[in-house]
Length: 447
Image 1 (tube, rainbow, N blue to C red):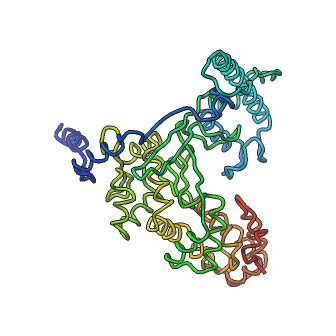
Image 2: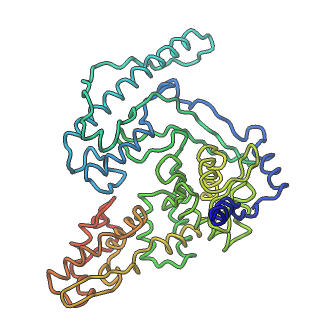
């Protein structure tokens, strides 16, 4: 009677098949040696540390995560990163009042601690004979903020006791210098809005980089985009980044490129698709851009990296967290975006295959039956397509376009989906997300 349970335990505890290593022992040794070169990786205070304060007040990642859950609880839905849950429409006004007051109190307490420490440091610096330039004084915070009192019982029941929303932190600067002397500098503890709901990593950094129009045009042309599609891609990329943009502080975990392709926490998703695409289409360039520095993607489509210090091969979440923590790996992505035509081209190919909304299906139930079609049957203009492209890049879908088109079809008793195209402007106006492309003069508008 015990045979089946025993077999089940044996099967469940059997080791899973292991991925073959992507790096040889010699390659691991080479990566460690290259990253250990003198001057390759330095950590220091930012140059403006004394002027701005060695300690600065920042939102805590724990507080930000709580605010993300608060955002959902107050009924605001999924908000663009540019809008705070405290400013958006929604229920629970008493909750918002308490949270806003708690945020102010926590920031005031953190600012008092930071000011006290900074003043002590400046006084010490003034006494140093080595000081060469005058210091800007940092004065203790003044003014009182009323404590909001106990958390509303209903709020605690819904979301639990909130963490401290603000703390005094010490931003640090990381400089990565490659063998050809090209350097990349990053500062952690990124400054975000007071009630930002998407901040996750203190050690994360951000760099927007520079987008040259000719580079975008060349990559789009290579990927087979039309002139119209290029204009749409360029308009949406202004909300995301450049080919060399990197962001490692928010809910995307590792975000790279002109549409901020992401890994999330498991090392997969759109950024892994970009790496896979370059590796498949241009293996020699991929080896030069990534593999030689200890970055690759395995057969399962998962980010894999070498720890620059130990040479350990890490995949999935471990690889993502190591890339966030060690700016040498972060800089590899930015360098590839700055110089590699193959990496830029891979970004365009993945953007087109994963996010282009034209072929997304639309199904409408009417009293006469089901009407089916695709987005391009209704949305004809560049401004309209850019609006949906923006939604799909940032949210993963064109929703709620089917609901809006369905309402139009039923209200006007339309027989074909294409008949709804005459109402495109009204539909797109309700789908606006991060930007109003109906007012973008670079894009063709609905009739």
